[in-house]
Length: 234
Image (cartoon, rainbow, N blue to C red; front, side, top):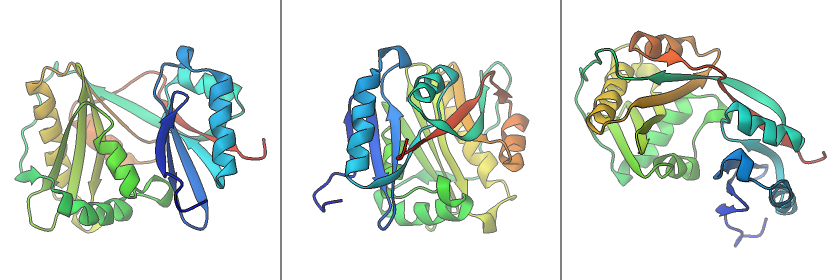
């Protein structure tokens, strides 16, 4: 890929992000409902990614209707995810630990936490972190209070739907209430802004995260989500 090739752009109804240095991986997120996406335009974007050197292309976490659109293009299942929601009909916890607003100077520490907390495929780089923060019109980024954070949460809001975009806690500081307090902060912030449903997803085998969310009033949504993969040779 040429040095002046952008690493993130939007076109043909997709937001595209390319990561990696020696082995380029592309991530595509649909910006339109499935019924408004055009197969010819999406295929054109896939061809462009191939031409700039992307070896693998993955979708964001998709709902079933979106999954069908990409499956029809030749995408295959990479990983299924559990989608959970909190509807604020039951009492919600208050944060038990102090937190503060994230600063741009925290980003290196946030990425260290994220890379320690997640497997390689799910780890954020600078672009992925920026994308998560800018994914919704309103966003709250909180870090555990010490000058050197041990955990962070990104919560977004679009209209009356909220999204817990990311929750990450350094493995050396887990099980002391950091994650629970950050989720409580996300719930309180969302409730004050009249969010009717806060959504979060997690991997099927992440029993710790699933247990945390369910203990705080989140319930599983029907259908779930899935990340799909497109083969360059298809």
